[in-house]
Image (cartoon, rainbow, N blue to C red; front, side, top):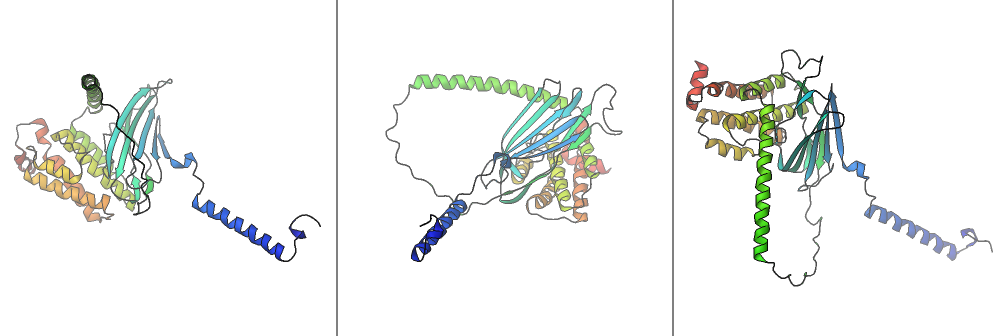
Length: 356
């Protein structure tokens, strides 16, 4: 008798074929139930943009988070030696996400280049398709023989690429909690005096580190803002109005940056913690600010609600809606401009002074 399945006849051959088919089915089921894990390179997403001597890299991980998972966003900007960087303000384009952690760093590498890094830990309010909007980085070219900025502007602009991604929802019953047995008896309680001493030392170190960190942050902020809040805001508004806003993605980015511009101005002009607050929290804080008249509060309330419809409700505004938002933002900047030079002017008189 020869070896192999060809030597089988009748019922023996039939049983052999059934066994091979069963093994193949089991193998396929195992592959479906336990798909191979994606390579680590697929779990991050990077976009790189460059303009002249400056390169900006945006990194997002993971690319397919579930609702509730932390989303890590890293902006790394590298500028050649002699180029001054003006990084975006905290939370300037992250309004649609909750910022749970933020770290920034700046250093000089071996080639004399400035490397500035902003790291965000974000939380999304809803699942579905999301977008990290374009981020604006400004710089001044102070190298010998180079033009510091374009004609009529104070700095060059570099816009990063938008990063679309999707957040998956968590269905009930998708994840089952695992119950573990009790851990047993608790360990003996430590020495209260030693614990109190450790807490005291930790508090002193935290206060000292926080004080020096605040001084460094304040110095960097002072160097970056050499002009008044009104001049910076109007300059950014003029640059924003010069960009196209025909496609839905362009309109979405336009409203995100217009809202961020107004919030930045409010923070620097009226000492309101605007960027890291939700719209409702900010409106509540705004209502208690003595520097804002009721007329300006109503104007900002309508403006922010219209911007939220575009950012969070997928509302596509008409050309008239866009014009009204721009007019509201410009009017607010102009009517609060005079108080920058004369703080004794009451806020309720700003509107009449601007119209006179």
